[in-house]
Length: 359
Image (cartoon, rainbow, N blue to C red; front, side):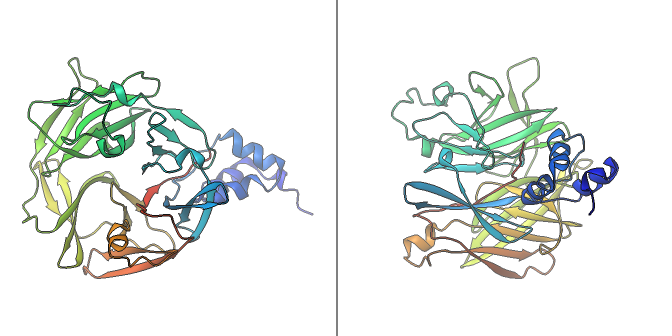
Protein backbone atom coordinates (compact mmCIF):
# COMPACT_ATOMS: atom_id res chain seq x y z
CA UNK A 1 0.00 0.00 0.00
CA UNK A 2 1.27 3.48 -0.92
CA UNK A 3 2.33 5.67 1.98
CA UNK A 4 1.07 9.08 0.80
CA UNK A 5 2.89 10.87 3.60
CA UNK A 6 6.27 9.93 2.07
CA UNK A 7 5.86 11.94 -1.12
CA UNK A 8 8.50 14.66 -1.67
CA UNK A 9 7.39 18.09 -0.49
CA UNK A 10 7.89 19.54 -3.98
CA UNK A 11 5.27 17.10 -5.23
CA UNK A 12 2.85 18.18 -2.47
CA UNK A 13 3.35 21.77 -3.58
CA UNK A 14 2.85 20.86 -7.24
CA UNK A 15 -0.44 19.10 -6.44
CA UNK A 16 -1.70 21.93 -4.24
CA UNK A 17 -0.96 24.54 -6.86
CA UNK A 18 -3.19 22.72 -9.36
CA UNK A 19 -6.28 23.12 -7.15
CA UNK A 20 -8.87 25.79 -7.90
CA UNK A 21 -11.96 25.04 -5.83
CA UNK A 22 -12.22 25.29 -2.05
CA UNK A 23 -13.76 21.79 -2.03
CA UNK A 24 -10.58 20.45 -3.67
CA UNK A 25 -8.49 21.89 -0.82
CA UNK A 26 -10.72 20.17 1.71
CA UNK A 27 -10.24 16.89 -0.15
CA UNK A 28 -6.47 17.48 -0.25
CA UNK A 29 -6.33 17.93 3.53
CA UNK A 30 -8.42 14.77 4.08
CA UNK A 31 -5.97 12.35 2.35
CA UNK A 32 -4.00 11.71 5.54
CA UNK A 33 -2.71 13.47 8.63
CA UNK A 34 0.54 14.58 6.97
CA UNK A 35 -1.28 16.08 3.98
CA UNK A 36 -3.51 17.98 6.39
CA UNK A 37 -0.46 19.37 8.20
CA UNK A 38 1.05 20.44 4.87
CA UNK A 39 -2.21 22.15 4.00
CA UNK A 40 -2.48 23.89 7.39
CA UNK A 41 1.13 25.10 7.32
CA UNK A 42 0.50 26.83 3.97
CA UNK A 43 4.20 27.09 3.09
CA UNK A 44 3.19 26.97 -0.57
CA UNK A 45 1.39 29.58 -2.65
CA UNK A 46 -1.91 28.23 -4.01
CA UNK A 47 -3.06 29.30 -7.45
CA UNK A 48 -6.17 31.47 -7.61
CA UNK A 49 -9.45 30.12 -6.31
CA UNK A 50 -12.52 30.15 -8.49
CA UNK A 51 -15.39 32.32 -7.22
CA UNK A 52 -18.67 30.89 -6.00
CA UNK A 53 -22.05 32.43 -6.71
CA UNK A 54 -23.93 33.24 -3.51
CA UNK A 55 -27.57 32.48 -4.28
CA UNK A 56 -30.73 32.86 -2.24
CA UNK A 57 -31.54 32.02 1.33
CA UNK A 58 -34.03 29.41 2.55
CA UNK A 59 -34.91 27.79 5.85
CA UNK A 60 -34.73 24.24 7.17
CA UNK A 61 -36.73 24.26 10.37
CA UNK A 62 -35.30 27.13 12.40
CA UNK A 63 -32.01 27.16 10.51
CA UNK A 64 -31.40 29.62 7.67
CA UNK A 65 -29.32 28.23 4.80
CA UNK A 66 -27.32 30.20 2.23
CA UNK A 67 -26.81 28.54 -1.16
CA UNK A 68 -23.51 28.75 -3.08
CA UNK A 69 -22.86 27.61 -6.65
CA UNK A 70 -19.38 26.18 -7.33
CA UNK A 71 -18.15 27.03 -10.82
CA UNK A 72 -15.74 24.14 -11.22
CA UNK A 73 -18.27 21.48 -10.22
CA UNK A 74 -21.45 23.41 -11.16
CA UNK A 75 -22.93 22.17 -7.91
CA UNK A 76 -24.94 24.05 -5.28
CA UNK A 77 -23.69 23.80 -1.69
CA UNK A 78 -26.03 24.65 1.18
CA UNK A 79 -24.21 26.27 4.10
CA UNK A 80 -25.63 27.47 7.42
CA UNK A 81 -24.38 31.04 7.73
CA UNK A 82 -26.50 32.66 10.47
CA UNK A 83 -24.25 35.72 10.41
CA UNK A 84 -25.67 36.57 6.96
CA UNK A 85 -29.33 35.75 7.64
CA UNK A 86 -31.61 38.40 6.19
CA UNK A 87 -28.67 40.69 5.41
CA UNK A 88 -27.78 42.51 2.21
CA UNK A 89 -24.44 41.00 1.14
CA UNK A 90 -21.54 41.95 -1.09
CA UNK A 91 -18.97 39.45 -2.35
CA UNK A 92 -15.19 39.87 -2.33
CA UNK A 93 -12.16 38.23 -3.94
CA UNK A 94 -10.51 37.57 -0.59
CA UNK A 95 -12.66 34.95 1.14
CA UNK A 96 -15.06 37.37 2.81
CA UNK A 97 -18.69 38.27 2.37
CA UNK A 98 -19.64 41.75 3.60
CA UNK A 99 -22.92 41.73 5.55
CA UNK A 100 -25.14 44.56 6.76
CA UNK A 101 -27.82 44.31 9.43
CA UNK A 102 -29.69 46.77 11.61
CA UNK A 103 -28.67 45.09 14.85
CA UNK A 104 -24.95 44.59 14.20
CA UNK A 105 -22.06 46.54 12.67
CA UNK A 106 -21.06 46.02 9.08
CA UNK A 107 -19.20 42.71 9.12
CA UNK A 108 -16.71 40.66 7.16
CA UNK A 109 -17.88 37.05 7.32
CA UNK A 110 -16.09 33.97 6.00
CA UNK A 111 -19.00 31.72 4.91
CA UNK A 112 -16.82 28.59 5.07
CA UNK A 113 -15.18 29.01 8.48
CA UNK A 114 -17.75 31.52 9.84
CA UNK A 115 -14.99 33.72 11.20
CA UNK A 116 -16.27 37.31 11.55
CA UNK A 117 -14.68 40.74 11.85
CA UNK A 118 -16.65 43.83 12.80
CA UNK A 119 -16.04 46.98 10.79
CA UNK A 120 -16.61 50.47 12.26
CA UNK A 121 -20.11 51.43 13.34
CA UNK A 122 -22.54 53.07 10.91
CA UNK A 123 -22.71 56.12 13.17
CA UNK A 124 -19.11 57.08 12.32
CA UNK A 125 -20.05 57.77 8.70
CA UNK A 126 -20.49 61.35 7.51
CA UNK A 127 -22.77 62.42 4.69
CA UNK A 128 -23.09 65.52 2.55
CA UNK A 129 -26.25 67.32 3.64
CA UNK A 130 -27.48 64.76 6.20
CA UNK A 131 -27.07 65.74 9.86
CA UNK A 132 -28.97 62.96 11.62
CA UNK A 133 -28.40 59.27 11.02
CA UNK A 134 -30.63 57.73 13.64
CA UNK A 135 -33.76 57.57 11.49
CA UNK A 136 -32.15 56.17 8.36
CA UNK A 137 -32.74 52.74 6.89
CA UNK A 138 -29.18 51.44 6.61
CA UNK A 139 -30.27 48.89 4.04
CA UNK A 140 -31.02 51.83 1.72
CA UNK A 141 -28.17 54.12 2.79
CA UNK A 142 -25.28 51.77 2.00
CA UNK A 143 -25.13 51.22 -1.75
CA UNK A 144 -22.00 49.15 -2.36
CA UNK A 145 -19.02 47.73 -0.47
CA UNK A 146 -15.67 46.57 -1.85
CA UNK A 147 -12.79 44.90 0.00
CA UNK A 148 -9.44 45.67 -1.66
CA UNK A 149 -5.93 44.29 -1.19
CA UNK A 150 -3.91 47.51 -1.17
CA UNK A 151 -0.19 47.60 -0.37
CA UNK A 152 -0.30 44.30 1.53
CA UNK A 153 -3.29 45.20 3.69
CA UNK A 154 -7.04 44.93 3.32
CA UNK A 155 -9.05 48.12 2.94
CA UNK A 156 -12.85 48.16 2.95
CA UNK A 157 -14.36 50.86 0.72
CA UNK A 158 -17.95 51.91 1.41
CA UNK A 159 -20.23 53.75 -1.02
CA UNK A 160 -23.21 55.20 0.79
CA UNK A 161 -26.14 57.69 0.92
CA UNK A 162 -28.02 59.20 -2.02
CA UNK A 163 -24.89 61.11 -3.06
CA UNK A 164 -22.76 57.94 -3.27
CA UNK A 165 -20.23 59.31 -0.81
CA UNK A 166 -17.06 57.25 -0.28
CA UNK A 167 -15.43 56.17 2.98
CA UNK A 168 -12.86 53.54 3.92
CA UNK A 169 -11.57 51.58 6.91
CA UNK A 170 -8.50 49.44 7.46
CA UNK A 171 -8.52 46.43 9.76
CA UNK A 172 -8.59 47.70 13.34
CA UNK A 173 -9.88 51.21 12.55
CA UNK A 174 -12.47 52.51 15.00
CA UNK A 175 -14.20 54.81 12.52
CA UNK A 176 -14.83 55.28 8.82
CA UNK A 177 -12.63 57.85 7.07
CA UNK A 178 -14.38 59.98 4.44
CA UNK A 179 -12.83 60.61 1.00
CA UNK A 180 -13.15 64.21 -0.12
CA UNK A 181 -13.59 65.47 -3.68
CA UNK A 182 -13.27 68.95 -5.17
CA UNK A 183 -16.45 68.35 -7.18
CA UNK A 184 -19.63 66.38 -6.28
CA UNK A 185 -19.25 62.82 -7.57
CA UNK A 186 -21.39 59.69 -7.29
CA UNK A 187 -18.99 56.77 -6.80
CA UNK A 188 -20.28 53.45 -8.18
CA UNK A 189 -17.26 51.16 -8.08
CA UNK A 190 -13.74 50.97 -6.65
CA UNK A 191 -10.78 48.70 -7.52
CA UNK A 192 -7.16 48.27 -6.50
CA UNK A 193 -4.93 48.46 -9.57
CA UNK A 194 -1.12 48.37 -9.58
CA UNK A 195 -0.67 49.91 -6.14
CA UNK A 196 -3.39 52.51 -6.75
CA UNK A 197 -7.04 52.77 -5.78
CA UNK A 198 -9.23 53.81 -8.71
CA UNK A 199 -12.93 54.65 -8.67
CA UNK A 200 -15.68 55.04 -11.23
CA UNK A 201 -18.47 57.61 -11.01
CA UNK A 202 -22.05 57.30 -12.18
CA UNK A 203 -21.10 59.35 -15.24
CA UNK A 204 -18.21 57.02 -16.09
CA UNK A 205 -15.44 59.39 -14.91
CA UNK A 206 -12.27 57.64 -13.69
CA UNK A 207 -10.97 58.92 -10.34
CA UNK A 208 -7.77 58.33 -8.40
CA UNK A 209 -8.41 57.77 -4.69
CA UNK A 210 -5.49 58.95 -2.54
CA UNK A 211 -5.80 57.58 1.00
CA UNK A 212 -2.12 57.84 2.02
CA UNK A 213 -1.23 61.38 1.02
CA UNK A 214 -0.15 64.14 3.43
CA UNK A 215 -3.58 65.80 3.19
CA UNK A 216 -7.04 64.40 3.83
CA UNK A 217 -8.00 61.41 1.65
CA UNK A 218 -9.41 62.70 -1.60
CA UNK A 219 -10.66 61.74 -5.07
CA UNK A 220 -8.99 63.28 -8.12
CA UNK A 221 -10.34 63.08 -11.67
CA UNK A 222 -7.93 61.47 -14.16
CA UNK A 223 -10.01 60.51 -17.26
CA UNK A 224 -13.34 61.12 -18.97
CA UNK A 225 -15.71 58.30 -19.94
CA UNK A 226 -15.91 56.88 -23.49
CA UNK A 227 -18.69 58.23 -25.65
CA UNK A 228 -21.99 56.33 -25.60
CA UNK A 229 -25.65 57.29 -25.89
CA UNK A 230 -26.53 55.80 -22.51
CA UNK A 231 -29.82 54.27 -23.68
CA UNK A 232 -30.88 51.51 -21.34
CA UNK A 233 -27.73 51.79 -19.23
CA UNK A 234 -28.17 49.72 -16.06
CA UNK A 235 -24.67 49.20 -14.69
CA UNK A 236 -21.08 50.44 -14.96
CA UNK A 237 -18.18 48.32 -13.71
CA UNK A 238 -14.46 48.79 -13.17
CA UNK A 239 -12.34 45.63 -13.18
CA UNK A 240 -8.67 44.59 -13.29
CA UNK A 241 -7.96 41.86 -15.83
CA UNK A 242 -4.44 40.50 -16.49
CA UNK A 243 -2.86 43.83 -15.49
CA UNK A 244 -5.29 45.76 -17.70
CA UNK A 245 -7.93 48.16 -16.40
CA UNK A 246 -11.33 47.49 -17.95
CA UNK A 247 -14.58 49.43 -18.02
CA UNK A 248 -17.79 47.48 -18.66
CA UNK A 249 -21.21 48.94 -19.49
CA UNK A 250 -24.32 46.79 -18.98
CA UNK A 251 -27.46 47.74 -20.93
CA UNK A 252 -31.06 46.58 -20.93
CA UNK A 253 -32.97 48.06 -23.86
CA UNK A 254 -36.09 46.77 -25.60
CA UNK A 255 -35.95 43.67 -23.42
CA UNK A 256 -32.42 42.81 -24.63
CA UNK A 257 -29.28 42.67 -22.46
CA UNK A 258 -26.08 44.03 -24.01
CA UNK A 259 -22.54 44.83 -22.84
CA UNK A 260 -19.67 47.06 -23.95
CA UNK A 261 -16.08 46.57 -22.79
CA UNK A 262 -13.25 49.13 -22.86
CA UNK A 263 -9.56 49.01 -21.90
CA UNK A 264 -7.83 52.05 -20.46
CA UNK A 265 -4.80 53.28 -22.37
CA UNK A 266 -2.53 54.84 -19.73
CA UNK A 267 -0.29 56.41 -22.41
CA UNK A 268 -3.17 58.17 -24.21
CA UNK A 269 -5.17 58.48 -20.95
CA UNK A 270 -8.41 57.36 -22.59
CA UNK A 271 -10.67 54.33 -22.97
CA UNK A 272 -10.35 52.10 -26.03
CA UNK A 273 -12.98 49.55 -27.21
CA UNK A 274 -12.02 45.95 -26.41
CA UNK A 275 -13.32 42.82 -28.15
CA UNK A 276 -10.86 40.23 -26.81
CA UNK A 277 -10.26 39.38 -23.13
CA UNK A 278 -7.48 36.93 -23.97
CA UNK A 279 -7.77 33.82 -21.82
CA UNK A 280 -10.10 35.51 -19.33
CA UNK A 281 -13.83 35.75 -18.78
CA UNK A 282 -15.86 38.14 -16.62
CA UNK A 283 -18.17 37.26 -13.74
CA UNK A 284 -20.70 40.01 -13.07
CA UNK A 285 -23.48 40.66 -10.58
CA UNK A 286 -25.49 43.77 -9.73
CA UNK A 287 -22.65 45.34 -7.74
CA UNK A 288 -19.33 44.11 -9.11
CA UNK A 289 -17.36 42.45 -11.88
CA UNK A 290 -14.42 40.02 -11.57
CA UNK A 291 -11.99 38.73 -14.20
CA UNK A 292 -11.07 35.02 -14.05
CA UNK A 293 -8.73 32.84 -16.12
CA UNK A 294 -10.72 30.41 -18.27
CA UNK A 295 -10.84 26.79 -17.15
CA UNK A 296 -13.08 23.84 -17.95
CA UNK A 297 -16.72 24.65 -18.60
CA UNK A 298 -16.31 28.44 -18.57
CA UNK A 299 -14.92 29.81 -21.83
CA UNK A 300 -12.67 32.83 -22.42
CA UNK A 301 -14.05 36.08 -23.83
CA UNK A 302 -17.48 35.64 -22.25
CA UNK A 303 -19.43 37.59 -19.63
CA UNK A 304 -21.47 35.60 -17.10
CA UNK A 305 -24.04 37.89 -15.48
CA UNK A 306 -26.01 36.72 -12.42
CA UNK A 307 -29.08 38.93 -12.18
CA UNK A 308 -31.50 39.55 -9.32
CA UNK A 309 -35.08 38.28 -9.42
CA UNK A 310 -36.91 41.55 -8.69
CA UNK A 311 -38.62 41.82 -12.09
CA UNK A 312 -39.87 38.25 -12.05
CA UNK A 313 -41.16 38.72 -8.50
CA UNK A 314 -43.08 41.83 -9.50
CA UNK A 315 -44.56 40.04 -12.52
CA UNK A 316 -45.24 36.87 -10.47
CA UNK A 317 -43.20 34.81 -12.95
CA UNK A 318 -40.64 33.40 -10.57
CA UNK A 319 -40.23 29.64 -10.91
CA UNK A 320 -39.29 28.25 -7.47
CA UNK A 321 -35.77 26.89 -7.26
CA UNK A 322 -34.67 28.13 -10.70
CA UNK A 323 -32.36 31.05 -11.50
CA UNK A 324 -30.93 32.02 -14.85
CA UNK A 325 -27.45 33.36 -15.53
CA UNK A 326 -26.98 35.41 -18.71
CA UNK A 327 -24.04 34.37 -20.91
CA UNK A 328 -22.73 37.01 -23.34
CA UNK A 329 -20.20 36.30 -26.10
CA UNK A 330 -18.07 39.44 -26.47
CA UNK A 331 -16.77 38.48 -29.91
CA UNK A 332 -20.07 37.85 -31.75
CA UNK A 333 -22.41 39.57 -29.20
CA UNK A 334 -24.64 36.51 -28.93
CA UNK A 335 -26.63 35.85 -25.75
CA UNK A 336 -27.53 32.58 -24.05
CA UNK A 337 -28.46 31.57 -20.51
CA UNK A 338 -27.52 28.93 -17.95
CA UNK A 339 -30.20 27.52 -15.69
CA UNK A 340 -29.25 27.08 -12.04
CA UNK A 341 -31.40 24.71 -10.02
CA UNK A 342 -31.46 25.34 -6.28
CA UNK A 343 -33.83 25.23 -3.33
CA UNK A 344 -36.59 27.86 -3.54
CA UNK A 345 -35.33 31.08 -2.01
CA UNK A 346 -37.51 33.23 0.21
CA UNK A 347 -38.50 36.42 -1.63
CA UNK A 348 -36.05 38.77 -3.30
CA UNK A 349 -32.60 37.40 -4.13
CA UNK A 350 -29.62 39.29 -5.51
CA UNK A 351 -26.83 36.79 -6.31
CA UNK A 352 -23.25 37.95 -5.73
CA UNK A 353 -19.91 36.44 -6.73
CA UNK A 354 -17.50 35.77 -3.89
CA UNK A 355 -14.23 33.86 -3.71
CA UNK A 356 -14.27 31.39 -0.78
CA UNK A 357 -11.18 30.70 1.32
CA UNK A 358 -10.34 28.35 4.14
CA UNK A 359 -7.97 30.70 5.97
